[in-house]
Length: 360
Length: 260
Image (cartoon, rainbow over all chains, first blue to last red; front, side, top):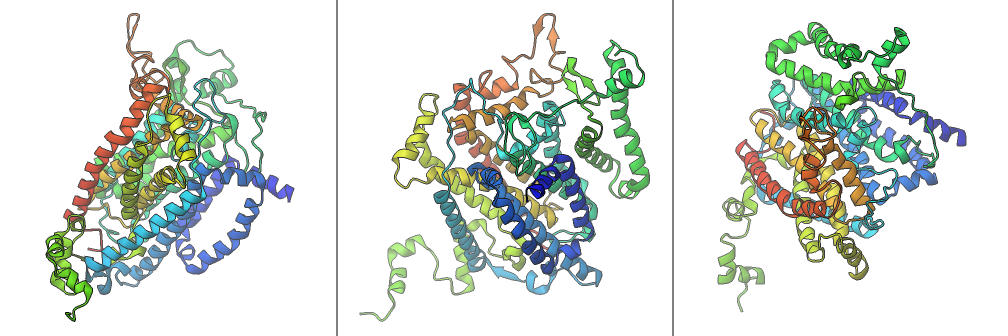
């Protein structure tokens, strides 16, 4: 049992669990029709319940899970699982109907028929209000709102964590500097979200669940939402302890755990390790390779993607939409790319200009 | 004695008729009159497509979000009676709420409701995306929704500071330290060191965006007051206006989405 727990601890490490999440995401997108069946859902629940109970039987894990402010994240996790399955389920049914030349379920005459708001909608709302009230009151009675020691500006708790919904961003701080993780990336998330309706000109899938008719839009959105946002929140909340060090789910948060961090900049790898010289004193010369890598990433790989996959979308949506979309996708992809560069090559910064606070 | 039921007798009184200007909802005319004649219910259309009332389609996450927003407003107003946003009193007032109010759960409802609202907003966005409901003619309303989502996070974030305990000030310290790194506008961000005229530093920790946000160089009493006013007055007002626009546009854009 201890060996199994140790195995789970290692497997939960960001590099493995993120890779596993990527694989699971790929499987979800590819085999959504199987995953969307009720049989699969029940099988999953039956299989995962003992695993969950086994996790909960561990004192260390239970302490973290049962922290009052962490309970919303458990609720979030369960609802994300449920509602992701629900969309997959509904999309799978609709996609099969569409393939057979029928209309989606939502388009059936009995669902398009008009009903009175009173009582149909109003009673629904009343039911939801009552259910919501009961839920909130029960939650409030069972769990006291947390209150710690009075504020003390001279003594920082370790780890000091932002509220849970920002922990995805705080987790990004491992891989990016604050100006990227805390400012530029969030701003682009907001801009990207607002821009979605103007980028996605595909008229299909308006008003019903479908995957097959909007593959590109759905995989991009779900990747950002499930793999980057939700997954990083889970890591940041449950698996980051003192000094933001990684701790497995069964690992006691020991303040003395030391992790050797020997991260190295791209410029150091090239000038010192590969060319065997000292670092040039001119900042731009020193970082020229990194700057080239960044430009090449957006320029050359962008051009290659356009040539191989993008022509179709480019023609359909026009230049401005397409290149803005390409930029957003490439920008989103910098996060997983940077994560893997860190794990595989202990790379710290591609461009390191601490003199200007400009590290990438 | 009349053989009419007591309910019918009440319905015929002048008082009842002055309040409710329609008969019982047992015919089409009255059902329409109920919805159209009530300031709260008139947010609804008189009739709507059946898929719009099916929980499997809508998840009711938008409605739940609005309901939680209203619950938070009510509990928040109640909490304001007992809470003073100063470094001297804030923490003690929260302790007093916990120690001296028998069966008091207002703070609990407020806090868990705030967490729940973040979740329901996210799930609402997820549903709207998955049903393609942002597509024309609803592009603009999707944008309004994104801003409302950001404001929900900011509401929750500003409220997080108010208990004035260790959890609060350090979470806000971590969060607001991000503002320090804003390019050109934060003193620790890229470009700040370039913004210098001779010896005069344009962007320093005494005037950058974090200073504006906190009213100081660290999370202290001015930050508490700022966050209190942002949390209780400013952001709710903006959210209220945007919710009105959001709901109005749902109606004007043809109700909630359904296959064309």
